[in-house]
Image (cartoon, rainbow, N blue to C red; front, top):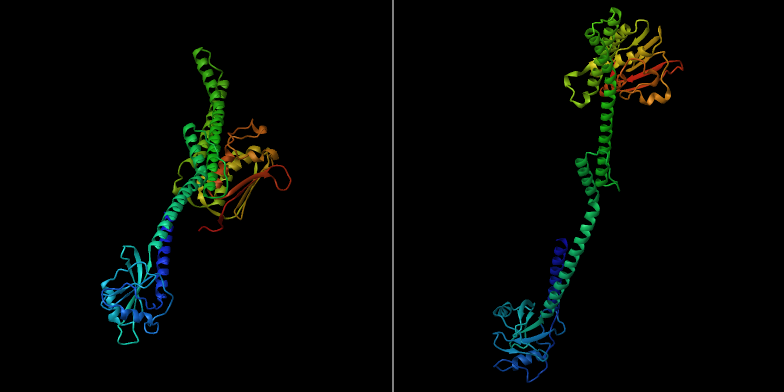
Length: 460
């Protein structure tokens, strides 16, 4: 459309320029005075007066600009009844009734109008009024015509050329546009194929190549990130199910074994000794408690998959949460010494989740502390630290401590599901903080857990 409009505008501009050029030439044109030639064809009246007027250049000069003769010329009397064709004029010019108004105006400025020859050819006509110096001779009209057929032929050729150029330009633009569009939208096609492949096969993790840095490249990068995140999420989900099944299988197998033993003793009529039965029941209770803790941990880790109620979020006193958690930890480790130093610190979060996180940190310290060991709990400037004096964590295992179901090979014989520190990391992240676990900073034995939570010393 742009090419066609440009060609059309070009044609109109050229047309206007050509016609304006013809008008300009006619305005500057002035026929030379004609010599006395007896055979100049005129109308029925004697031609002497017109011939004499045209024979003397000083008697027929108009008030306008003078110039050389141009194209076809004819001389017309005031009443438009006598027409003379000077030598060199090949065609007569059609006279219009409005030409008589030039006499009425009595002005020397020429009038430019459209017209035609007597043979029907188009022309542009200049009509000028000439005053004769001799008052006995009448004024005349000198009509100079420029044929327009060459102009129209040129415009017709130009229309054909512009039409051909426009069609060629449109064809080239269409081809180039299609090539550019196909090249630009190729990543979109690849993205569509990848999405359809994932929808059809459910094979997440499929990526597409990224080229450049435009919007399509950004879209492809975002899709690759999303696909990779989905693949990682599915992998974590699969691993979580497998690990949960493995952790559940051990207590369930032990429970089933103990229950089968009790049932067989009753069926065979050989009851178990009271001490053995009491031990079996104690083991079953411990296994039930282990299952309860494991299921609770799994429910805790599944919370991000569902919307969190807004009512759980509030400004909570972290120092009070730490104090309650220490009291519960003292019951679980009666032989341990707890050194507690806390300063007021208020955070915005879920009080129950944060208390569960602090309790898990203390449980971890209690689990690995030697008998009679010391556990140091500090809360200063929003930084909560829990330090034990146990065996510590090997450096090559620090990167796995917050993974779900991960347990150090040296602690596999200890009770637990490997979910406690995962719950700590999740709860701290939900409160906008960060948690880390590493060796004690003073070079002594044990591990140091550090929790940083945004907040302030005063409730707001």
